[in-house]
Amino acid sequence: MDLSRYIRSVPDFPKPGIVFRDITPLLSDADAFRTTIETMAGMIEKSDVDVIVGIDARGFIFASAIAFKLNKGLVIARKAGKLPYKTMSMKYSLEYASHDLEMHQDSIGSGTRAVIVDDVLATGGTAKAAAALVEQLGGIVAAIIFLIEIDGLGGKKELENYNSRSLLTY
Image (cartoon, rainbow, N blue to C red; front, side):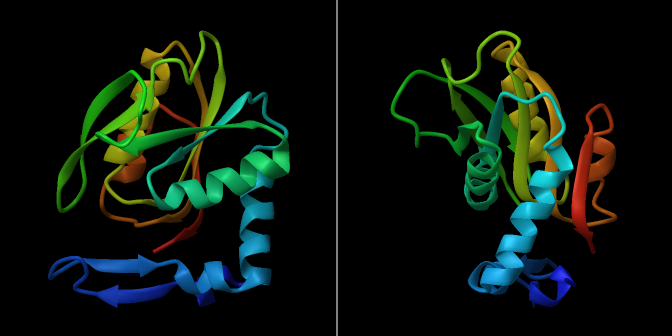
């Protein structure tokens, strides 16, 4: 199945010069969404993994479905101020903004093998912050997987020390 048919390009969103890759058509098509989850899960199903880490917010969609399919725990990495318990925080930059990413301090134990999941790899800042949080909590980043990679924004280079893969590249 050609999943790229289900990705809508929206120019000048959220600001001029940015082409936003809208995944909502993929999510609304049952076959495309199922194929996406099965393919992403297949990228890591043979890996030694304890938990799947989903990045706020669209990464949650894919991470939760993959965790369910692989019978793994789900850990969430959220924007600052969204988690109710004690957190670890890491600042990161996007191509158009900067934020803080947080995880609960007790979400990853020492030696826990984690796969980080997000929808889009652009500059790599969000995923790198999530990886740093996993490592600060004593975990091991087994892989980082994405639905989409935006080529030319440096994200792949930013994550060169990690096993990172994407289904689609633009």
